[in-house]
Length: 367
Image 1 (spheres, rainbow, N blue to C red):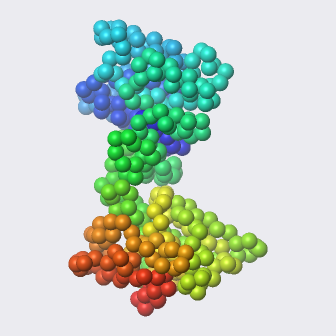
Image 2 (image 1 turned 90 degrees about the vertical axis):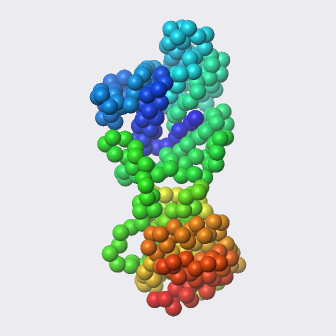
Image 3 (image 1 turned 30 degrees about the vertical axis):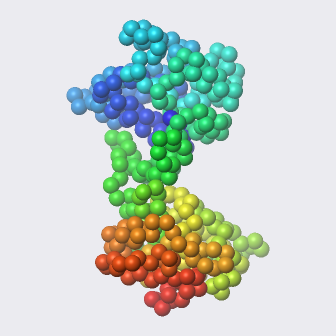
């Protein structure tokens, strides 16, 4: 297993919490190449993994080392004590940062791709650890094809919320999303993740549109924000955070709304990255709202991909998206016609449209 993310995002915390839980019933070995034993012990005490009667870890061992031969020698000694020729299956190995590991032959190339290859060869030769974690940036991405599962942490380090996304998984789907909150006691699961991605406006504001996106089997409501302003330079700026931005030509050509002389800034609230094309309709409606400086109707949600010809294409699992919106109290859904439900959904008025100009007209009628 390979775990990646920006520095300070929570990789070591997740690994330590996972090993502490495993150590309730199994022997576990935590190998760190970037922190001292004292630093890890302090974190473990803060997380409640060690140091009190309710600690999760019954047999969690720690080794702060970066040289592969010394790491293997420690494992061999533990194996010898257990009476096996190879690594005892009750031991699990975690490395806080694979970029810091090197063998004697690779001492001059620490962190380089060749050093990673040497570490992999060494691991396979001596009995590959059951699980291993580390950063997934730069040269470390070259190791992704060797592992069974690769996870990546997302989110703003200045926020307490973290997203864990699988971009390789031989044992399951790769589009599932884990949502966690970083607390003083470590990472905790979030029961209602949609609440994280919706701003709490007392009144409707211009440039805001709520999208129902799908992450694996989980529908999420995410607020899409747009700010459109007159450009004061020859080349207007286009900036998108967590969203695609190349849909302005469709808005101009088919809805008669010109943005060629406007700066356009887009943002997905909460630091989530939306890769689904079904965000198109929400993005265009948010831009339209900001340009007119008029809020969209209160309680409106939407989803749908907008083609280059202006057509609004259906979205997968539309029924699940609508049910999630109704459950969270939204009252109007502007969706592709092909996703119109066969049965009414309590508390939710559904407006099904075929084209972007129809969607714009319905929004104006609801104002």
